Length: 378
Image (cartoon, rainbow, N blue to C red; front, side, top):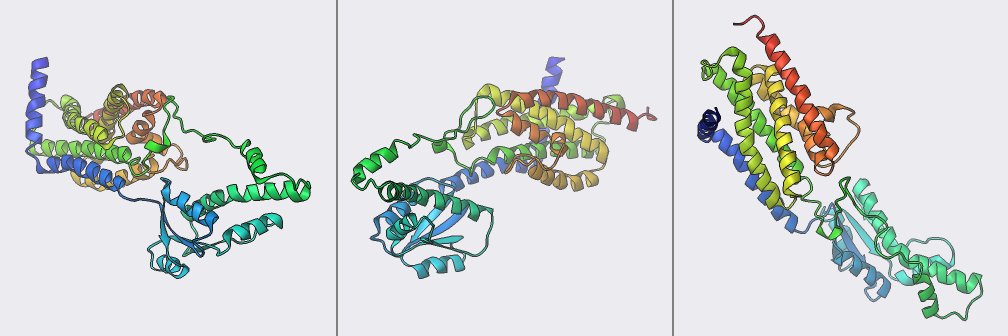
């Protein structure tokens, strides 16, 4: 029995690799992973910011600009020679926003601290207001606030409390005692794995989700091939009661090839976790994809209907599964999709058990639909 299964596996694989469409689907992966890796090595940012110092000799403004430009961030910065150039970059869509520091930035900030009210010290030029730009303004406020808060503190000690004899060095030393070393927040997953900020590349984070959608596409390709083969009589010698198992077998062959490619792609993309976690996750994901694609195949019945449903389902998975964002606004719908469990299971064992339950439930539905569709057939 084992020898027969192995023989059929290799024969089906040999037949699959003669299909140009299947080879094309497999070739999508190296181009996808290679392109994402090349993109991640380039200068990147969700917002491009043009910095302008009206007075480059202002040490405080120059220090803030230097600190912004040398720090790795989801924001990218470019230093402009003058205000006109910064505004032009925003107008010509070369930059999303321009930050123009006033000519007397340090003295203006000190005056604002002494007057107990904030005077404008940076002019922000934007074409429109959106979430990334609001986020960027918070970054700007954070950079300015550290110096501004010390100025308020120093002014309070000397003017309000009358301790004019305290030196700058003593004030600075007392102020720095209140600093918190390191970050107030640390990113940690449910399984205890921590994410180091220096090793994090947000351009590579969607690669696992995109590969998961590609894996489901392989499952749909198997469904399409099975329908075509069944129509052409390839499975005519297979008893009708065994057709569902034949479909499962054909899907298993294609998904086993896809699983190997997926494992290698994750390793090359640099988003691999551990062999045990990845192997278990991919095997269960393959099971979820197998039963899900067969359920859709049984519901559609024809290649035309299935072909029309595939792009809709993939777009739904892209929106509802945590590929780019993790949204809770879709209710229970994501729980009907295999990639949702797989992407969640990488750092949560809870979803591994969820995949086992998912496979059992969808398998029963496939059997029931198959039996109902063929109830009057020999």
